[in-house]
Amino acid sequence: MSTTYTNISCTSNECSGLTSATGHTPRCISSTCAYAIQYGNKSFTVGFFGKEKLTITSEDIIDDFYFGCGQNNQGLFHGAAGLLGLGHDKLSFVSQTANRYGKTVNVPKIGVLWGGNTYVDVPISGIFFVEGISQVCLAFAANDYDSDVGIWGNTQQKTQAIVYDVGAGKIGFSSGGCA
Image (tube, rainbow, N blue to C red; front, side, top):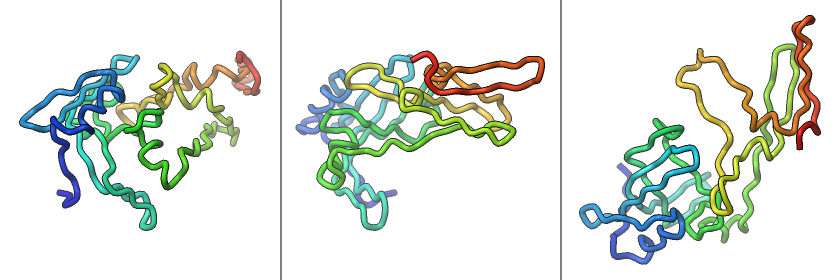
């Protein structure tokens, strides 16, 4: 149990601020601020609103970092340890760390390594799914088991031209497809 974690009170200004971050009025459970949010794909998270000392590295420490501590995460979030808010709201990771990082979050370079040592870069439009002006999600979902077949989804493919050579048993990729 963390010694720096605290629940946020229902009567606090921070709890009231959840309305702009989630689009829903927070609830009160035993004087603790509780949140609920549902995403476009019907995944949802419900939990308590808290604050904690966020340690990114030994030199990057954010005191009084506000976040939701999910108690019931369903859909694509089932079993998830947490969600990282990258929106414009004052409670997003970007806004809460603005003094240190200047409201800039570097999007990681993501690609897929296929058999035959073929590497395909995934463009930004294939990494994020934009639900709305205040909601952007990663465009990836985990499989239940490592042995499950992976799916190269349509979000990742949307700027790729893909050639299927069925006779030769090969597949080819080129950027600049359906933009």
